[in-house]
Length: 170
Image (cartoon, rainbow, N blue to C red; front, side, top):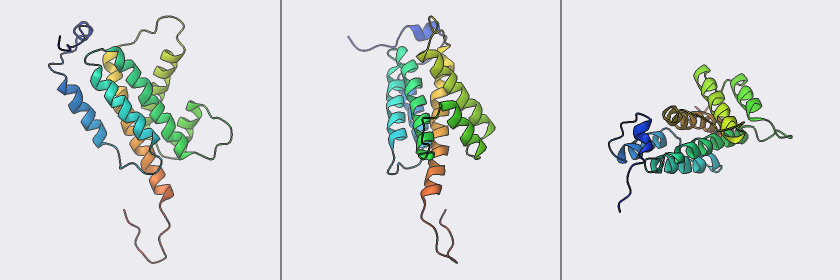
């Protein structure tokens, strides 16, 4: 029997005519990211999140896991940006520092907190973690935008200095 769309998507009111719609969306998210550098852990995590997202068409539970993995990518990107932290810092502390350093817009700050809240809900449920599945799709996309922003900041930080009098490459 050929794989079929998870029937629960219909219960959620999702009109997803074909699985390729998920594949196209994952391709759009991939296009948001800069070229991976030496430290590509966040990019690898996002690639896994995109794969899980694509296969969530067949089993919508994969979407929840995709959000958790995308969240790991965001946290990993912050830890690449701030490797000098000697003691383990909470995800919230990393978000606040990135905002204070000017790396996150107000909108990205809100997304980062939404991701953290979703991670906490799913990782530490008091009971059954009820969540609206469709908005979690946005969280996977937001994670891509945040990782792109943070990893671009890392690339700017790690760029070798330009000799005096030479224009800095963009």
